[in-house]
Length: 299
Image (cartoon, rainbow, N blue to C red; front, side, top):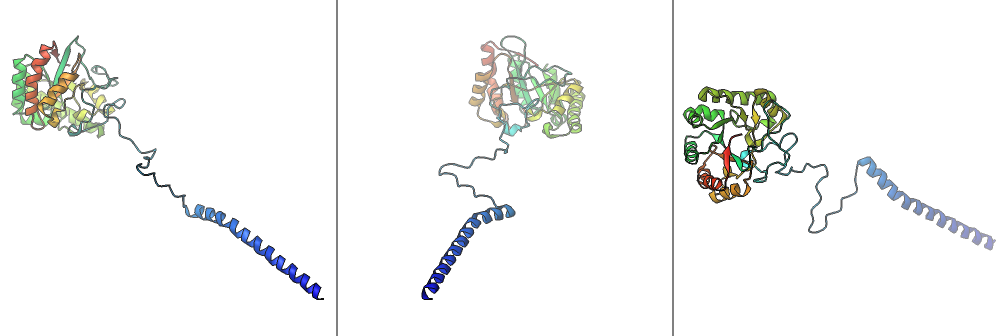
């Protein structure tokens, strides 16, 4: 009897141990599975490891990266402001060509094509009663003909100055009515800005402009299409000395002399702010360019 009770007690202990072991194993295997299931239900994600010291996390692969400043969009460059012109100074978009009136598929004109060492000078944002007369005097001294891209509001405010530019034989281009970014505006507003400037220039000077320069160098299909409809050539530039930012006379001169070559269209300003550095720089670069064998034409 004693031996039988001892045998039954041993079997009971073994059974308890076996059952307990099975229960522990089941609980262990259930833990990770439950965590995964709970995570799926609650949307929890695995934590992102912290970046290694000295490194920053990579940007989102879908985040938009800024377009290189010297690269034009197709068919038009991105809009940008004159006060933040970021195109690489002195470099023109390589694929751009010479515009032709009436063809909406053409890109803006970035170069002139009138022979070896022929270049063009363009003056924007006027007319100004302060700086335009000084520039006209310089152009007369060196017998240079330039293109003045005029804002309609400025023409309306200074009609006598616009007439002086025309009387001196310079070309007048349409630079919109109020110098706003057309690339982000609907076609009806684009047309209004261009038409009002043309009307102002025609009323004051008797001329209908055949060239159009977009404020900020910002082109769009709607702007190019309106140019074609109005019979105007879209005019850009290939040398930007950033005179609008007043970087110093030496900087303006150095930029123009370093980057000008056959076919260059140089951008300068007679309006939109203090342009004394522009006038001083032109006093230096005009005789230097002429002495280097360059001749000036208009687009």
